[in-house]
Every structure is written in structure tokens, then in C-alpha cells.
Length: 292
Image (cartoon, rainbow, N blue to C red):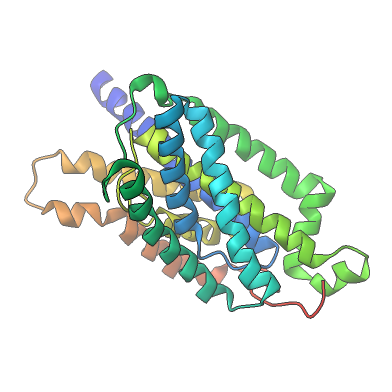
């Protein structure tokens, strides 16, 4: 009985660890989409954050500087996306897809220039990696997001930007500026989420290490109906499925390991198929503005 309780506790702790990058990315996507900007680029933000954090942590020995660099990289990439979707009014889904492709193409180029490798960055020593700090940061972010979203003027402004942008303009608040700020905040949070991948869950950057987490984070915010607390629970659920498939790979079974590895994605599809129709997206999501 004690052994079973210990195993369950270990599984829950693993689920929380795995959910950390999902939570940062999902909350970033939530801010962006509640302001009216469709966020397909979370995968790219995560990847560029992971790469940049690994590089800075390698050269400075500080995972905190790695996180800061990951946030800045996410902000920069979000700025590129903002230029196209907010300034040039390019289709948001196409622009987000292009951002993902840009991140995937940039990563091997950078590692080749810096480390003469198109694969992983050098492994970080233990002192250059996080132990538990990202988990506490994620917990603090969850509390702050819930308070900011419902109790502050800026949180309500972001919600109005995605629900009734014309009313917000009439009230004298620029929807364009609100969406710019929201998009940059999304890049920062997702970049931090990527940083936790390479300095917390792993010890280096490796090719495509995000493994679709950006899309799972997007599924989590949809599953959470674009609200902070349900999104948190959805991230933990998807983190649990990921941690579970890792545990199941070590169990002797007749089931091929490839089938075990698809569990998180299978649960993502099932969750979206069952709950997407019950979720209501922000009314102005994806709509461009004639003025800002």
C-alpha cells in the first residue's frame, strides 16, 4: 500500500513538472486569443525559447538568464508575427504557421553556427539547471492570471478586445495597442515555457524538443474555454497523460512503445472532439480592425 501511494505521488509530481511548459504557453495563448488574435504560433515560441535559454544558460551558467533570454526571444518572434497580422493584416492562421516554420528553420542554423552541430546544444551542468523553481513560478502565475483576468482593468480590456472591440474603441481605448501588448505578452510567457523545457525538464536543447506541446497548450486553452482556472486544470490533465505514457514505456507490455507515445495526442484529440462544440470562442477572434 505504501509503495502504491509513493508511486501515485511520484506520478502526480511528474505530471506537475511536465505541465509547467504547457501552462506558460497556454496562458500566453489565452491572453492572445482573448484579445482577438488567433494563436497558432505557440509551438514556434516554445521552440525559440528553449533554444535561446539553452544557449544563454550554457554561456553564462545561469538558468535565470536563460529564462530571461527565452522570454526576450519569444517577444521578438511575437513582434514579427504582430507586424504581419496587426500591421499588414495578414491571415492570422497563415502567419502563425509561418512563425512555426521560421522557428523550426532557425534552430538548426543557430546551433550549426554556435556549436558546429545541427542537433543538440551542449549539455548543461546541474548547477546551470533548475530544480523546482519553475514549478513555483507556474503556481504563482496561475494565481496572478486569475486575479488579473477578472479583477483588473487591463484584464477586462483584453477581454473586451476579443469580445466587443468596437465598444472598446468607442470608450477611447485602442484595440490595436491592446492586441499588440497581448501578443507580446503571449510571446514572453511561451518563451519562458520553452526555456523550462531546456533548463528544467531537460539539460539541453534538442531538435524539435517541443514535440507538439504548443498545439497541446492551444488545445488546453480551448478545453479550458479560454478561462484561467479551467485552462490550468486542462494543462494538468494533459501533463498527466504525458507523464503516464513515459511511465508506461518502462512497463513490460505487448503494446508497442509507439502506441504508448501517442497517448497525449490521442487524449488531446478526444478532448477537443468532445468539448470544442461546447466552448465559445471570443466573438472577435481572428477579426481584423479597420482602425486602431
